[in-house]
Length: 295
Image 1 (cartoon, rainbow, N blue to C red):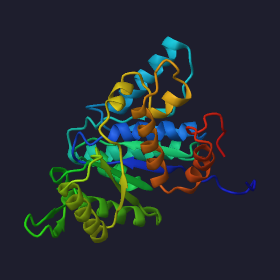
Image 2 (image 1 turned 180 degrees about the vertical axis):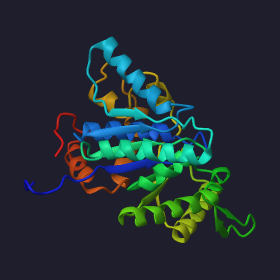
Image 3 (image 1 turned 30 degrees about the vertical axis):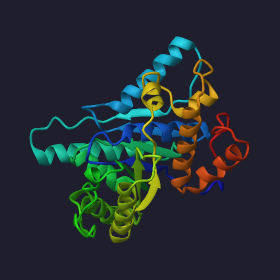
């Protein structure tokens, strides 16, 4: 880098979905740890102060390190609570300032910032969406969850219109463009996919592709419904850790399949530095390398 070149700001990945139970925090922690093991400098921000799932996950991770004495890569983690101001306008201004100030402090000392938002609509969540370079919306692969994105005619299966959430995302895209000329790459992650083909799965796929073209998002495969994801949470581990540092956890075929899901997710981000560092690991059939230094 030229001594006169400005440092490149962190790439911000926001996990957003106004419906709970979609797997946002599980995806967030796997992305964060995956990036750390690729040698990137990572910060994480938990905006769901009520549930605090991402914060609890890193608490379990730190607890495991203290118990075993075995180091695990850790991000610089922060959480932001909702404002305590009674006035809505004051609360909004307070939340906007605290999030903006925190991102401003983190963005030139890290390569990536991963933000986990609550499963509900609030001002702080909308602010986080507006800062995203990549927005990931995990959703359960069913028409019950499809309404998060849009509505469709039950007889013709024709997409009728976008949802309130989709409209909010596009509003934040406009805000982002006005703020700094940036764009938001929106990825809808089909979580809990069934391995079996079915009429519902095919109809869901067709509806999503029709809506993707209409409102502008990419579609990627997420994580299958696996017990191993839930079991690892309480230990502060991710699927990648089981191959890298956790010899006390026997690796099963389910772990191997889940590792492939994580790799596919990282690849789906389509961020050049990630793809460059993933390539050698995949070529050697290894998990993401853990001893590289950030560029």
